[in-house]
Length: 293
Image: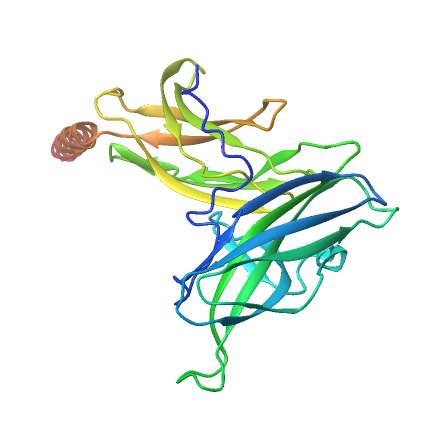
């Protein structure tokens, strides 16, 4: 059995908002999960709390959100078509000292949009005033918005790469894993490696942490090591199998690469054996030459 699954609803960003010198501002909620039909509309409200002793001027904007290959969040403009479906009611807002104010965003989904998930950041950017010693933006806070368009959902994750060394004498076997989510919704991931002998008999298994949920269209990179310890004592050909369970439907995929393992003692034994064989061959050649003379 796999270890208890790590259920990460969407991606658990280490902090769902990016903050740069904006500790006196707080936004809530930090994330939105919205399920909506094509052609429908909906309002969202972000509460902005200003704990500073003076008012703050803010820009409101919508950013696209995606993951890098390690699952870390990235926010940019122009990377997600859903940026066109969500707009702030006003582009600027002022929050008085020690006050709280609501910022409204309107979601309007086109009628012909196909089902699936889209990922956005609702950004609040603080603007320095003319009296400030700084110029431009002093910080940004971003709330994550997951838009799930209703309809037929496809969960489809597959291997891009599963590989490692073909030969080793170490007790730690490195591996490289790449996965791609080819479906239209984010999927949670659980994984483990299983080591088998050349006949396919399992010797042991080891859990592999695959991080937070893999977004639709994203690629996840993972590298690590299988620690065999004293579980494998004999040289030979072994199978290293990666097993993955993903999504709400708990689909299973797996892939294998092969590795020749020669523990250090076997390498020493091999060289000793070769030395003995070579020595005997030399003696036999010398004996034949002597006999021939």
